[in-house]
Length: 623
Image 1 (tube, one colour):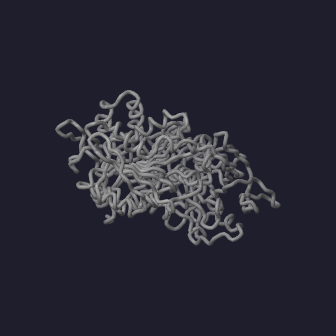
Image 2: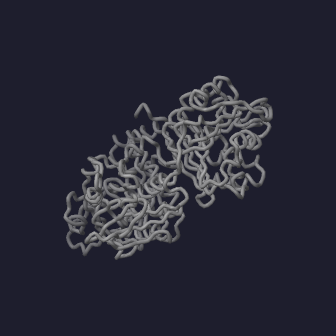
Image 3: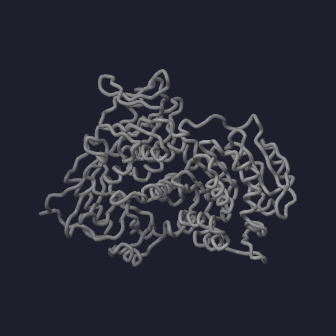
């Protein structure tokens, strides 16, 4: 276990003598006795010049240093809703080292609210994330309001958040019990995130806090306090500091060209469309329909990755699975993934002991991952495996063609069945995609290369393109899944995973997979591939594989995977080529990366808080 790992420790309800919610850990109350919402309006909204400052803006971003019970967020949300001149979008980033579970938050919050805020709080609790370390993006008001919750210590996560902040709510427990919430180091990170003319406000007036705020780059002053406080602190960023200029996609006026119509391209196009940004997606496979890249692919599995030390692949995979849940559960019918859960079967006793010890150290929420013994595994899956394993409640069975069709359905997305042979920029900076004989197929302010193993060759057509050694080393693999009928199909209620996987029946058929064929000339179904899938299936089940004699014709699906050496995706802007983006190298985890990559690129374009930590963004950056 890395010494940098911090298990998330949830809060537990407690009250002071007056019945005010408090933290037993810090010995301080979550809000003053004279009213949390009243304090939020007077100190944090009025202290930051709200609602006046967001009026006439396309977007406005607030950062709060302690979420607590959420009163500041609810007061902000209500004020924004009530203002007919509000900004088109409102983004909130809030840190919380010890979040409450949804049931505890409900019990502490709802009984003490009046109907307007209670209705908002009910939406908040309904969307409340599973208690896992890292960043969690919640969306309200049709996506016009976002809340990015940073679960973990503020001294670590403040360095990890990417945002363009206009106003800061400084609201941690008192400096005497929680000095990290008021340190010069924290305030320095807030300045890193700040837009020009950013402001800050807090009920705290401690001298050391005000000196630290000033040393970080704020002009600090006192003003009339509220309730039992004679004074409060307000501040504004020094004029020479802060980000200037609007993000390129703010306002939804930007346009994009996306090369590649598989999971990578569809994820980006869908995320852009949700923000009002139109795109043209180019891929010859559209001749087979919107889901043509997975034509005939009956179903696949999305299972969160997990390592014993929660390495970057595990953390990015967790973020990807959470984004997929947030995005795709809103689809209807066959396009909506079935959250049936995944059991990763562990038969080796030594491996089982190591995993159980790792779960004890990681302390991840049991409603995300937990250990099941053999009897519990049988109860969950309906299959007597004779072994237990890791149970992931977020395991999802995905119908590939309907999912892709749903992602590419918005009117803002144009699909064209064209082959792109080169890309480049014109004199105005617009990006263009070229087909045969140099014909311009599409142009836009941005261009996203999402064409898997074809990406390096297209990038090489860009004049002055920066060398990207990691991308040049991309490799591709063929692979297949097999469809089973009748007695050959396994009647499992959940996804079974390990060295291979088995899905619950779809349309009466079983789906098992998958194979890996390096440097295959073309993806194709083979008898050898079917036999390999059957061997993996019977190893999962702990059974001897029956002889192949007399087996009838077998069906399935074959396709490509593209990956790089570290098996992480390559997502983000290409340095030195403004407006050019990559979303590729998804390997065998295209379902895990698709929604996350789409929201990352769209959030970058629109100046939104990014839904992934900075150190993880560096791991997947094009290089």
